Length: 190
Image 1 (spheres, helix red, strand yellow):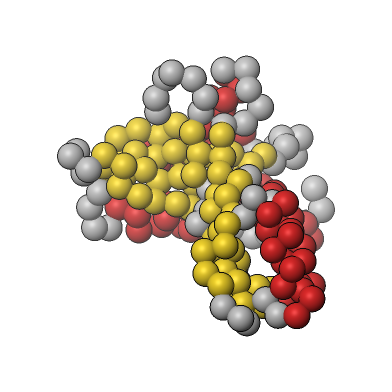
Image 2 (tube, rainbow, N blue to C red):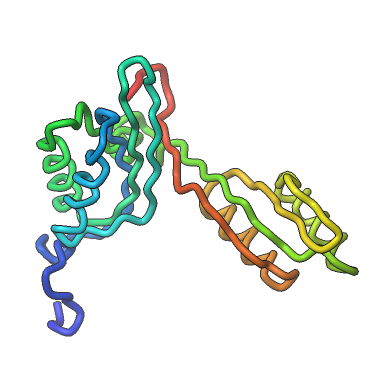
């Protein structure tokens, strides 16, 4: 590998050159208490790992447990290191690489969805075109005035990317995305 392609301090270049970089979705079950998210995120930043998507929510209220869904990229070796390091953090109860689990179940990827709010100018001829395209993408109008729309769209990240790109020439004002929520198919839980 050329030295000019190797960023210093990055964990992505620890593995042999032949290993392909892959995107994986990790699900991490943790105690819902102050500082846990900072410790999980600190593990990534301290080792030069990048987070492409991050969502967190309390999922088991009685047990005070939260689920952190992280999308990250790395070689298989780096991804295994990330998983092992996450498992060593004290308030972490379980770490599942949903991408690996999906492959073990004979599937390509886990079920992944994202929600976005998209604000678009809604005036003149573009108003009807915005509504037509929103309908084609199954986006819902959650707020409308004579000057703008706020649309809610749910789906794979690629669908949201495409919708945002189509809205740009129509007067895209603002986008807010939740990050990916993911789960594997089948009767088995995390």
